[in-house]
Length: 169
Image (cartoon, rainbow, N blue to C red):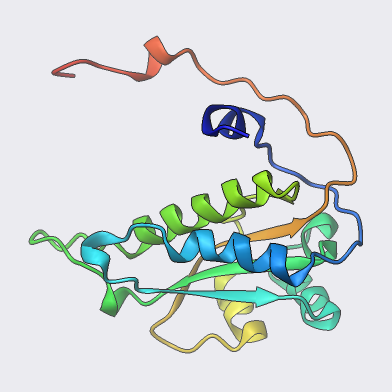
C-alpha cells in the first residue's frame, strides 16, 4: 500500500485476537523502528518486546485496561536520556527520538495488518519494576500489538487550515 493510504487507515486498536504474531512479521516491524532517525544518529533507545503471557499480565499493574495486556505482543519504547543529543538550552531529544521510533513501528505494524495503540498513560515506575528496566532508562511509550479483533473506530481530525500557519504565528 502506498504511504498516503497507510497513514490514513492507521487507527488505535483496543481489541486483539489471541493469534501469535509470526517472528518474521514482528522483526520487520521492529526493524522499521531501528532505521528511524534520531538526533545526531545517537540512537539512545532500546525496544523491549514482551510476549510472555505472565509478564504481559503483570503489566496490568502499570496499565489497567485489559485490551492492553491481552494483546499477544507489547513493545515498550525505552530511552537513555544520558545518551541522547542535548541542545544548548538543555532540551534533551530522547523522548522525541523515541516518538519517531514508535511511529515507525506503529506504521510498519499497520502495513503488516497488525493493530497497535500508542500508550503513554501508564505507571512508569511500576512498568520499570515489572520489566526490569534499570535506572537511567525511561519507558516513554508502550504499544500493544496484534491482529485486530474488531473494526477500528473512525477518527476525526481538524482541517489542515486549522493546524498550519505560514511564515509567522
